[in-house]
Length: 125
Image 1: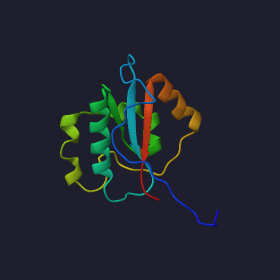
Image 2: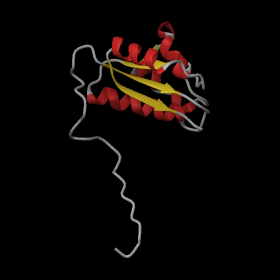
Image 3: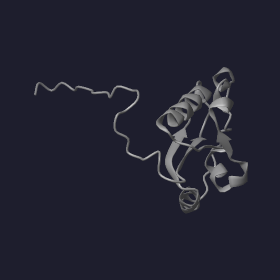
Image 4: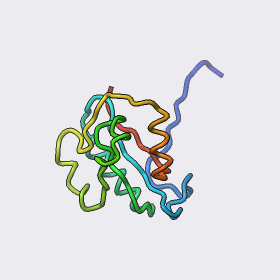
């Protein structure tokens, strides 16, 4: 122990072991962008959705309008390989970022009701 600090990073990419079962009946994933916009959000949304489909997830929701969008379920969009294919060429976020925060308990109720097993929060600030 010479007083040096070492950092260790996990290699990104596909994993052999998942901490969720993509074949679980009715399960789905959700992606939301919150806070300030930052470069590359649409590219991250695209790659995340495509990887979820590659793992076998059948339903991936895009939450429109940040955390506030969770309580406006009628505005959600279903992401598909086709509708995310070219979004990396657009600026901003196709999911519209927002800084509002509804009560956590309301978000939790929606997540449970919709059987969301993977919940991805993206954004700046």
